[in-house]
Image (cartoon, rainbow, N blue to C red; front, side, top):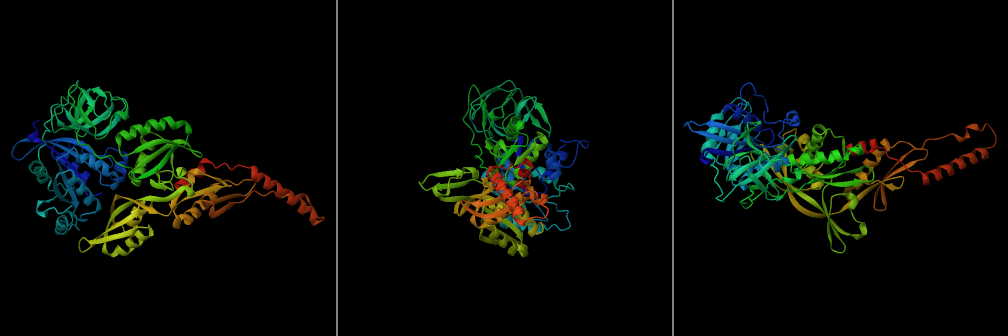
Length: 596
């Protein structure tokens, strides 16, 4: 199709503002999906997405639309996730588009992630079409939402289209606006093929299936293409588009999005943001996406050590489908061989673990999530530490810098005190507050990343009865009084339980870990001391009491000195046993503690 009749667009919004329902309606209205095949959340193909009602992956789909003027257009839609942990999916999808539909819920208004996604779209210089969705709800407040569009996002309110994806209101207006307001793709003007890889997945029969957007030239089966990042050449076997299932086509032309297969066996050969070009006349690389930096690190280990190779292969396939996820091999004294994995956030970590269990049938155990610290040594050298086991001795450390994030919390006015208390509890500094409208405020704060790892989002939701929303961005490093907390069992440090915490919180964390370990470590013939230590200082202790054998049972009457002699003998034996006895911590104990 000629480029004048092609439109590439994305749907962006906060979580649960109706992106996927709207994409279902667009597919149905353009006749891409028949009534028989129609179902809720059609583009969410993963079980996890359907169960949780969230989009995890961006989904491309090609639609044919006959406009009111009688011309036929090819609309390429990419439905994107809304959660902050999947912002990389959104940025990759936007780089393949010329425009974006911005969905705002009429009942909830502009939220934290709406603001973040609009900034992303503006950074990619896209045409933005605001859509106010869910106008059929009884508590929808359209005038207020329009006011927020102008005041918070600086988007003219008269451009907004009123719609209800569920009831099918305003769908025709949205389709006409896409045709009228989003510019047609323009070729880059370079001789030869230029296509950008924006996603991929692994197919057992076809190998790596790569999603591409053609910026110049055309892609057809039989061509020899070159991937510029890896420098490898392949012969294209099949090209096609999605509707939403993949279907083969004769060729992909300028401005179109689709996929190609080329007998690419190894997931490592395809890099997100790479440029595909003709092998005979290579064109220069397209400006790609920025490299993504993981925020949260956790160790993943197979529960059965024989599954190590299986886990390695599964992680490679998963990384292909989720390029924000990174991993490298590591080993632990307690847990054997495994991988140190980097994630964009806690939901991302949870989803990856769940996908490994479901899609690849892996039994895994994850260690406590940690972040990357920068350690300045006394000789001036700067080291990056993501695992407490690699932290140098205290005597060699000048200072430790921890990563900070700038968090934007939007909540109703009456909860502002609770939010400020939560920020100070998490060692954060409130930067400023903004009044968004009569009901809501936005708090901007600087908080250490490791404090928001575990329960920060849950706490915001519970304190604000579900009305609060948050978004965050990386904000550099800050020097802090961080210490390494070691757990000693019978005097021996156990590396799997070590962690880096702030000095003020070390004692509480140590007590909690020691108490948990006391419950799960089996009793021995001698007493076992469980201690939490910072360097040489013990900050918490629990004791697993010994089994007691009554050695005086055979004494009947007689002198007390005889009983005392037997008890002294037993005491010596226990002392000797304790000095040579080793405590084996069972696998279940690790799993229980790491769960807690």
